[in-house]
Length: 99
Figure: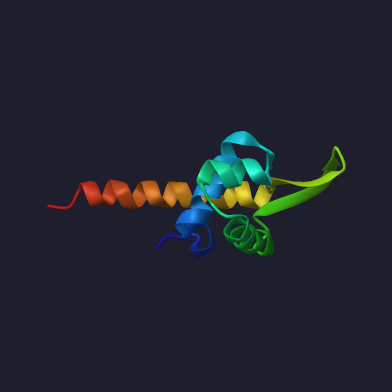
C-alpha cells in the first residue's frame, strides 16, 4: 500500500465516520450514531480508536442539563482521511487497468 493508506481509517465503520465528519465539520454523537445506524457502544469504540490516533477531537457540553458530545476531524485527521481516499482512488484506477 502507498504512504497514504491508513489501517486505522480503513476499517469500514471508521471510514464512514471520517467521511461524515469530513463533509460536516463538528457533529453531535447522536447524529453520527443515527446516520450510521450504530449502537452507542460501537460508535464509542471506534471514536476512541480515532481519537487515540489523533484523527478526531471530542468536545463535551451541556444542552438543557444533558451532557452532549460533539466530534470533529482534527487537522491530522483531515490530512489522513484525504490521503487515504487518494490512495483508494489510485488502487481503484489500477484495478480498471486489469485484464
